[in-house]
Image 1 (cartoon, rainbow, N blue to C red):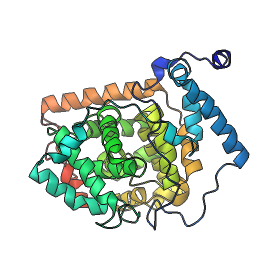
Image 2: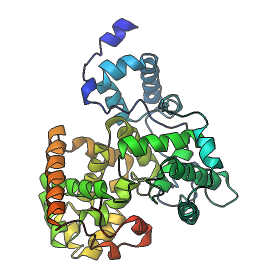
Image 3: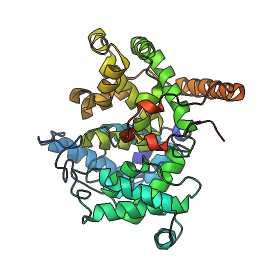
Length: 373
């Protein structure tokens, strides 16, 4: 077995996210449980031929038997196979080892909790995947489990409290694992992958919005110029994408593929997915002509055409984007410096566009000044 593994060896462990050790899911058949909505598909999904699926399963089983080796010395192979899609039969075997505190989840459930957070959570529970059988009514187990996970998070991190965007992420996790595991996965994702996204100031989300804008200028200048012309600030369209990690945007099969890659490669996948949607919606002169103003542009970005969000199209175009690690690093440094200067000069930070966002776009989580520390 060792000689077979050595044949694939590529020592590139330094380039992998330090947190990811596998997908988070237990099996949940694609489309199963949805009665409608973005995630529902009336047609059976046309997956790879059975022979291809079987070959992929065998490769994953071999890789799982030498998981530590691949994580340390051949992470590129894991990355390559995640981009092709983790076989559904394999997902439940790829459980992320999480740092857990024994009885912590149960202790949080027994605690009283902050009354404001509890009230806000109760208001949001019914909005999460209402057309899925787990969350369709109060007597379904999903709503109670979702309440428990979100409540436990606010007690575990009282300085953060509750953010609306956590609810769809937690609901997505509950479709694939028991509540206690979903809680610790939410903790891991919030602390590692989406670090500081759910803090009260939202400063990191604002910064990442400007990073997205800078990357768009590099890969598709016409779309960048159009958004600037209609005064579409990044936070107008990317807030929900980033905070909810696309759980409220993508069809179910596409969402699973994006999350496989997201957990393997890190938050840059959210940027790449955003860029593909922006270019798909506004990449042609005809599409930009159909969106002459801000309202038309935002309406198109909030409801992208189905073909743009299809699994194969989106994943294929994400992999084709001409962006390097250095591009991300340079843009990160540039926007971080820019916001520090604006903060020091008192010229930045006010979310003047908040009034234009409906409550469904997470308005309640914005503060008047995102740069207040």
